[in-house]
Image (cartoon, one colour):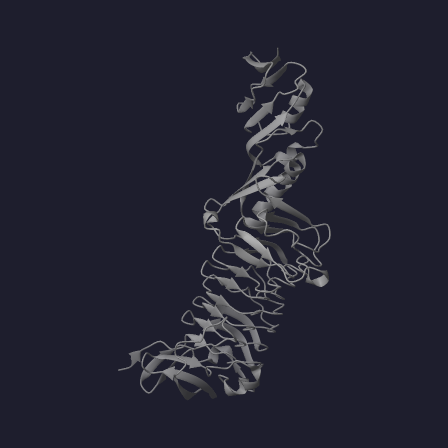
Length: 448
């Protein structure tokens, strides 16, 4: 009776980025199925194996490590993910480095079974693949694993289970579409990891990531990427940060509109000039950077872009509740307030954050152009402003929803004013020479 065992298809990537599989000392066999001779490395003690040969670190030796001859012509459904050898049933779980290196005769839609955990360096580059599915169990993805597969017409796979990723695994896969999906188990993102791809929407870097770029260009050359959110370490008290290497981080990302660096992030640089600048060839990007002393001067490049340093002493502060997916924007200037009104829908669109505005210091809104359309749908946790006449007060109140929690600073008041009963959440700051009385029409602010 056959013994059901799992096969490990081991992958080894160059350097330490992709770890060597545990079954590297397995036994090589030749397996002939569907008229193709396959190289498989097995470990009969636990039923694990490698499709291809372990240990390849350079393309010069690729021919010695392939899973099949480079000239093999076969469709992907013929790849032996499961097979029987000498009475033992095996299931492939890993793909070795260079297993299908530039094997252009390997065609069709590649479905990676859930049992596969590792896809090695240069495992499928420049092959004839036309689609990519599965990926449900992959935790290790090597350098250039699917690079130059320009005929794959599929959405990018869900990478949320990855614990390790190499450089440019989807480089120049120009027909692939969809969003980048990463999980909390990933601790480091190497240089050029997602460069030259076609990711769209927002790239969200989870809080578990410690280093981004380790030199440069993580999202370089993504024409469809519209936003980047690096969450940063969750515990400010621990003084730990996510380090972001800024060189070419979002260069040549023509659709880029917004970048949000979390409170516990810090920037590093190599060079920030010309095409090496973080926002080179980008236009009109809003960048939010924590004012923690680690970012000054690192965000460079781009046209008509704006860098906002946020913090308690800055023009605005920003607090994000990750559990509730809520952002609280606290503008301290009129300029920041009018900008924040535009950011609220953008935060929802790009980051799925429910953004609130909280104005906690007195702003003079007398001559500010704010329309009802600008405030429609915006949640104000608090709005504090000054007004000196009834006309000014009515004009300002009329621009905000009646449910807005409003604080009025009557400092400098020149005439009595009435706060209509329609506004139930109005608070008047106590100042010398001013009293508040209830009238039939509302609250009256009286100059004594």
